[in-house]
Image 1 (cartoon, protein in one colour):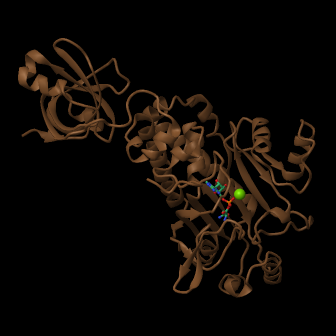
Image 2: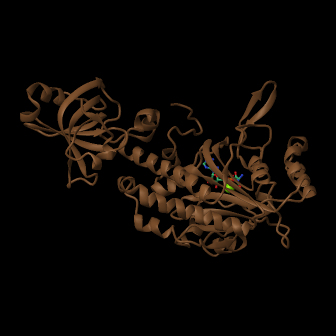
Image 3: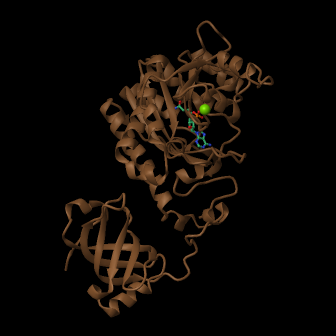
Length: 433
Ligand code: 4AD
Ligand code: MG
């Protein structure tokens, strides 16, 4: 029997007869020739079935194949200069593995609700395959980047007793008779990690009971959170821009075909690999908005999506908005030394209207200040004693940030909505499939 390969490895098998396990995505042709659009999970490819070569009986099998039937196909790998993929199989035998009757997602257009209800099948489509390749590459490059920069990957718990990003959007669960929360962020644990290991990053699912329906919010999303001891915010900003530029560069290098499927403008993406990224203070951003038709924006307001988009459109690259008002940011951020009303932080806003992809800050180190903030935000100090220990025993200046994986994937893929950036999105009113 012939060797089993993945179609993605075609270049090493040109001229060989091989076997591939695949699914039938589509079918065309007439007379003595049939073109099967196949996918084996690694890529989509064409299988050519020619009656005089394969024989009448097998040709009838091929003709009867329905969408998403699974098959073993055997044949010779050939170069195919007409397709971007570059290879096809000249099929000599077909064996049906699993039938597929009335596959719900047909090549015609479907509405989003229908596709979301069939997300378990929708994932098989060409575009979703491309998005998941971009996601996978961002994850791979993340590990490469932080490894080469000397960070340790540290896993933070998902069940926690402490809220770090405000109490309004917590998912609460019963933990043997006491309340526990699904983690909103790994940060507080990453700070403990930074004091133990110097430079760490967490990467895991985080949860927010977001009650609003937007194109940018999931209730379950994945976040990459580096935390660095003996590091100022200014130094952290440099890590952030280098990291984001590295991700874009790697997607450009390793996901060329996926970006074609997504019809993403690669020249535009190339611009985002050039550092440094511009910076604007929150104060200046408010002024910029007020001068450009957003008269209702007041100092102290949080920015909404139209505001972020306007600011982003004033630059060609991602832009850092730095030093937000203390009142609209988390309790752990370091107060500005000369401006008591702002904190040392930044949000990185993606170009083209994709919104905030990173939130980061220098962390407050002063014990009394943190105790005061915890109280002001109505949090129970007892739950934070372990965190305060980090300030009691060898506290050092430290900074960190969180990049939202799905925001990043949405931006780099050029998708309208964040729901396509994760295999099974969790949204307000959606827990299935
Ligand atoms: O700005 P956020 O809330 O920051 C933190 O959680 C910090 N503890 C991070 C840190 O300093 N270690 O969230 C960080 C990022 C946002 O910039 C955004 O990209 C993403 O997480 N994010 C979401 N992505 C999808 N759906 C949501 N509901 C999100 N909320 C935040
Ligand atoms: Mg934020």
